[in-house]
Length: 151
Ligand code: HEM
Image 1 (tube, protein in one colour):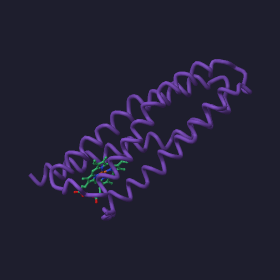
Image 2 (cartoon, helix red, strand yellow):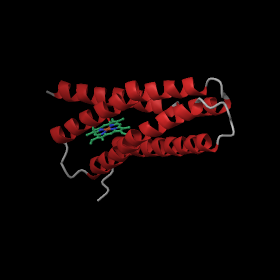
Image 3 (cartoon, protein in one colour):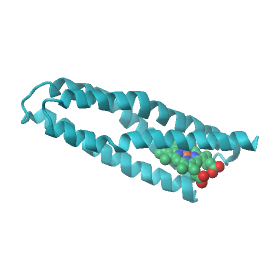
Image 4 (cartoon, protein in one colour):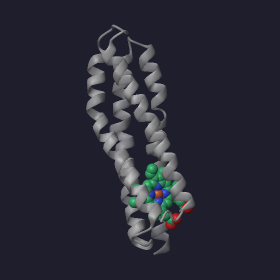
């Protein structure tokens, strides 16, 4: 049984690597999209594809494996797990709500006018999202590895 648990932990970490690995590259795509009006819509479509096909499923898989390990051998009231679950849930909601913004951005990106204010607003919003996701993931990573008793 111990091997199954370790297998679950391996899957959890692999899923997090793929999910966070995909999300952390977003800032380069945003910069590229801001600078390249001709290819902007295609760049953003690719970002959406990476999110839908890699980041979202692997964040979901990581959470499922995490909850399974929690229920398997950790006390239900482990503070570091509860806080991680809350932060991961917030991250998931942020990820889900960002989908429609991406569609709006892709539609606007077809406009070749680089001064388009709505375009700039969406780009700024994605940058703030990216910073929040990155900071929150590093925080959860800390909780996972150090497993502090928070209460
Ligand atoms: C941003 C999200 C997450 C990241 C980056 C992450 C990362 C990690 C890493 C690197 C480990 C290995 C730690 C070690 O071996 O000492 C781990 C373990 C673990 N994770 Fe996560 N995790 C995340 C989300 C979650 C969630 C949402 C849950 C549960 C609700 C969870 C539950 C667990 C448990 C129970 C372990 C302990 C495994 C053990 O040491 O036996 N994780 N996580």
